[in-house]
Amino acid sequence: MEKGAIFPLFYLPPVEYFSAILQNKDQIIIENAENFEKQTYRNRASIHSPNGKLDLIIPVIKGSKNHTKVKDVKISYDFKWQRLHLLSLQTCYRSSAYFEFYEDDLSPFYEKKWKYLFDFNEELLEMMFRFLKIKVQYGYSNEFQKDYPKHLDFRHSIHPKHSRPDNVKRYFQVFEERNGFLPNLSIADLIFNQGPQSSKYL
Image 1 (tube, rainbow, N blue to C red):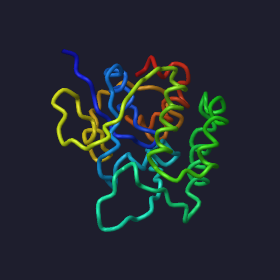
Image 2: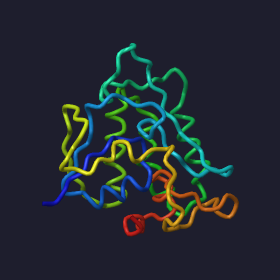
Image 3: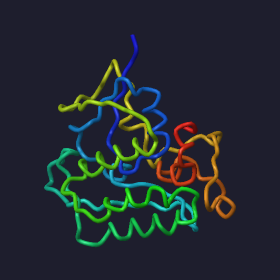
Image 4: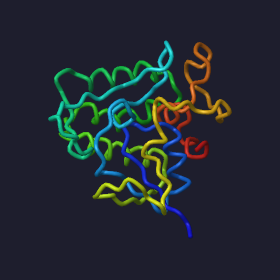
């Protein structure tokens, strides 16, 4: 019997996230009942800056002492992180081959204010699917389960602190000559550098 897969919802997820989705895209569950985890891709994305890897972090409103469900986590706008993130993307990718083709679609995500991180991430994920020209249907967990015996579980395996193997397939990156190739950055890095070829890379 073919296995499905369960994924967390990330902010501009890394390349490996989309590779895993394409390998399991017929039976995907998005986790929306887990407790929010700090220092994960749930509210951060890694891009390639002139000085190396740069993490873009979405600040969230601190909840009570009780654990907060990921779908209930609210975005903080105490400082202008949207302007900072958009400026960082523009600075890092303005000279990439395809940034200008996607910029107008991406900009509204850094202008409109979303209340919940989950909603923001989901709409951004849908846009990445459109950029990649891939169709993915998914359902939601709705209640938390520690184990999914019939599914591949990616909720903890795709993590900023987990080192990735060195033998990943390379693609051109804007600052590769300066910093070397940086594997498994945000899907935005792949899309801005490879454009329509991104899905073939995945």
